Amino acid sequence: MSEVDIDAVKNYLLDLQDRICNALGAEDGAEFREDAWERPGGGGGRTRVLEEGALIEKGGVNFSHVYGDGLPPSATANRPELAGRSFEAMGVSLVIHPRNPHVPTSHANVRLFVAEKPGAEPVWWFGGGYDLTPYYGCHEDVVHWHSTARDACAPFGEEVYPRFKKWCDDYFYLKHRQEARGVGGLFFDDFNEGGFENAFALMRAIGDSYLDAYLPIVQKRKHTEYDERERNFQLYRRGRYVEFNLVYDRGTLFGLQSGGRTESILMSLPSLVRWQYDWHPEPGSAEEKLYTDFLPHRDWI
Image 1 (spheres, rainbow, N blue to C red):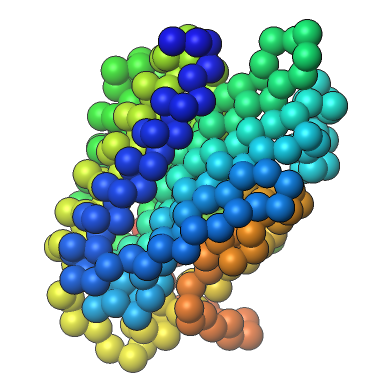
Image 2 (cartoon, rainbow, N blue to C red; image 1 turned 90 degrees about the vertical axis):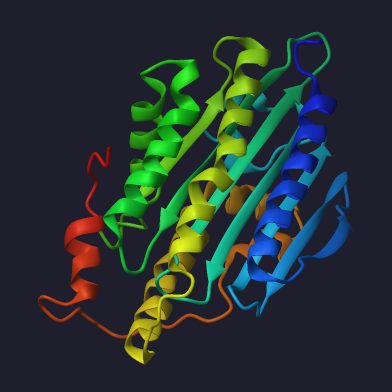
């Protein structure tokens, strides 16, 4: 195997997309529709979307593989060694927005970035992770989510899960709201520790564990009854998701600035969302409990 085996990563990512779509589609009783696309300037991908399903109101599982001769400012601002290099970026990114407010939204992403120029060693790294955004928190669900994340990281060292958990807590934080987007999980970037094979194995372990982390929660909560108040709170909290993705998310910014396909980049946004001026939950309510018991950073295991 060469130091950076791009074909092996691409084959893994395409298979991961298939497995996730098959499992979530079966849970919903519907199929993701596929939209294959090409990027002007190099590359393309296949976007798969499920809308208005019995379980999934809006879900997207996107594979992309893009390349080009120059990088956008968002990629080189803090990495001057990337200037003047050609690049390849590939990954699977997904966001699932269920209809039932008692089923959390989930996000996952695994990716590889490579930058090269003649006469120099390639610069490469893996990134990704997954995070959970409940609207009505359930302690056992969050413990299961984090336990699965910890177990996926365990073969690579005891320090990996707490390190990636903190990274996730810090990253998925809305500074302008001074609150977390959800209950976290794993996040890592610029990762090439231990060489290509070790870093690729870690990325696979995290990608493979997403369904183990999410599906049991979906299966437990998808038949929970809900009322209009709970639905409205879900739509209100989805506004935080939109705010984060459009203001802070590195993948969204990179995709838009590098000439990516807008429809695929913005597939993460929910179909329905609402903002209310200066809204606050009623004291003692289930909605307040999300803010007091689940959004503050804590050790869940």
